[in-house]
Length: 252
Image (cartoon, rainbow, N blue to C red):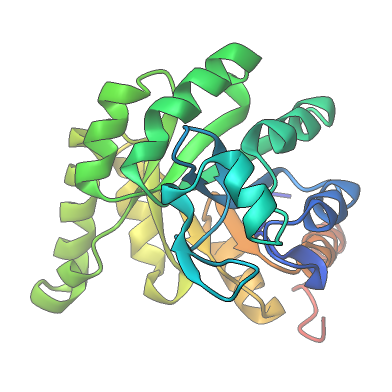
């Protein structure tokens, strides 16, 4: 079979809570290629798994994650925020990869230092990077590969092909290895143009088998999903179909 896209498990995998050890373990047990989670940083520079800066403390007071130390966050929020270090140790033990979706520029330096300390530069890459953040990442975390989160406004002001060409220019100018975009924005020519520019195409967040199958046939390089079990089943179905000389089944 032609190379199937890398299977990336989105945080909250298989119905488990976002940013949880259970989600990570479920994904790793399915043999995914990459695990994705969102990264923020506490006031004292500890990277944690979190999408939003807003946290509700046990007294019901709204606060800022980035305004709290790690100890204050642990003691006052009543919510477990796994540290990136703890998560990466699981990733390293499983010999896996992790996609760090960066939610704040402040996280770049602490993340770079942590990954350097753990010697995991080959097992980690960054996403969530706008053009400006990607350039800052090149400065603060130069040894980490990064994806460009494309500017979807390009689609509003340019014809589709020209928009993709512009995104490729920005990715290369910012030193990114590929484009990261919602799967709904992807057409087959997007992959062709990106590949011709030496760039990969990573898509998110795909939940339906028909979409997974179509994107795989087009040749995207990674599919992110909260249901990696389904994506694994699609991969096996497509492999069997190719071996038997048939189209893969649509009923998965």
